Length: 473
Image (cartoon, rainbow, N blue to C red; front, side, top):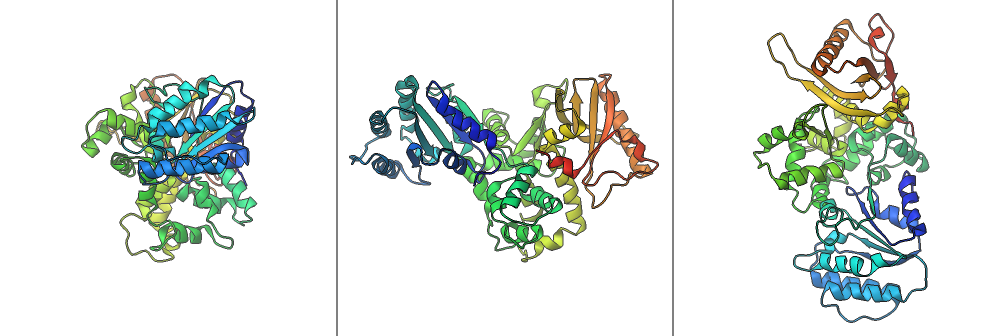
């Protein structure tokens, strides 16, 4: 049952109405549902489907491709000596089909590009020399190795340059989509429980599909991720290895970002990693950004190199905090940690990430969905003993002369603004207003699960966003 991918499904089905051949690249992190989306969308209407083999050489890849051709077209084939012969055979087979759209789906394509195989050249020739001149071919390529899809297909500077007609990055589910999945599976989890799961594993459909009926979210987290013998033990290493051919630099970047919620600049990352400022580093940042693991905030008036990079992948941050380096974990480790001081601090930071991932829902709750805006984090370093510095994790800088400073606070009930906290808020707003010099009105927005309790200090708040608002579609 396909859930939460209505827009992507409509876009894929539109290719059947196109008056030209279409080259579609579907990409995204491991377990995000790429293959499931394509199969559920096209059902039994494929003309040809093939899946590459993990960690196999060229000979085995070609043999499996020949077997797929025989299965779909019912014609025995001789052994292929190279990929040119394999794609010529595919071309010949497709030409023999009746008129109408022909959907060709090649899954896990990166695995097929083994060293010195000539795979990419053969793919280029198949598309540029034949398929693109027709009007009836829908070529869909997919793979977990997102770095390969981006560099060899989408951003290729050779024969496939600008050949992809549809880029389809699959992003994690929103809270609303996770709630829909929970309801369809008959799981009796309320919004607070769904939020708890989202803060730890994000909106990755495969993870949510492994939750069992009758389990609390804390029990599910222990069984799936935290306990020593958890179902997804070793998931972190498999995740990055599946996405990136040489994941060392990618893991280094996310590790460096894991210890600072507000993010780091490129210069700071280079210094932390003692890395060279070169194209390989830029490529790794871009790939992590394309996969949704990190997010870049461009500060107004600053050059791109001063952008802040933040780690926003919930599972990765959960792993760094509660799994990595913790060898002796019991079967109820997370259930005990969740109510500890460490767990409560983590919940506060994790809730901030959830809010950042649902900025569209925040803007909708504020009634500014139609207002153009920039969203970024901001920090002011202390310049003197009297200046304690300031940090704001979420700013909505609007084009209508207003900036919403969003304070995100996680609490079990209504959040209480104390006198000391009100003074801290005033200091932040003053520091931000003075540093920007843009003459905009600054509105304080509180984002909390249950809202703000009215008292003598709550009047500083101009607007509120609650957990129910984050669940909006």
